[in-house]
Length: 370
Image 1 (cartoon, rainbow, N blue to C red):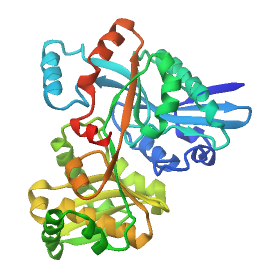
Image 2: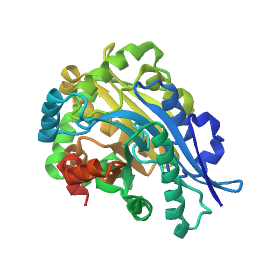
Image 3: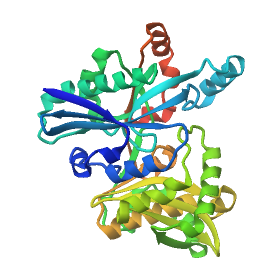
């Protein structure tokens, strides 16, 4: 018999049992615990677990928050929502209960390797129903699953569709296959114009000092200033990260999380938080002083530094996140689609949200991942 429970701290879950469900993710137990302990404002954490007897079959991180409908919009849709908010300040904020983590790249659905594929939809539906029951106790009206990977779409449609969830396009994930022997071979795969441009940009390496670190306590204030500037430039922002996040992730994850810091003389111009396992390098956040970093082509220096790290460490994939798609495609990345699934418990509100759902889809670059 399936049994579901919802806990408020990941510390209540055995680390090995949790990570046993998430064999292919870098954002596992240690990372999620660091997020929980980081004190992000306006989020309450939940973790949903489904067991059968003594066996843990499925799990997912989740959160509760107050969600402004314009938060993850860009362009005309955002401007329209901001205009409506000035007229009716409280009408566009909903209590959201969401499967996933605001600081993770996908929804984080984990299944036991022993769970037969034809049972996954039923187990996932049990998980969703348990989470909705918890969300209703917390007076949440909007339910969602954040950034469901395309590989999970079939089981998600089977489990969430009958409950009334509708998918909308979210931001795709960018990744570069490291299937070349060296940087020269990689550069040879780029277009002639891109290759020429990159070689010119990489000359700036002569003026930049690069450090690899796990401890950034001595420059944490500067890293937070870079984060504030980077966040202010972003068209869309959801979570507001803290100093405890940036210091806590490498502390909790040991050698599987580290920073690459970019200095000009003694001035810190950029900081890149990276996660790594035996096959993949995941670029979590690239923070930059735009005025001083762009003349040194810092974004592109970081890209080639990370590709070089993959080659040196024998990694086969460089995952670079959910932004700057034009540059990433130009540099050989491929895009993988993700979706947000949502429903509102009020049928009228739910109907209206589904009617206007296309306005909430990710930016048009998602079409290039199809």
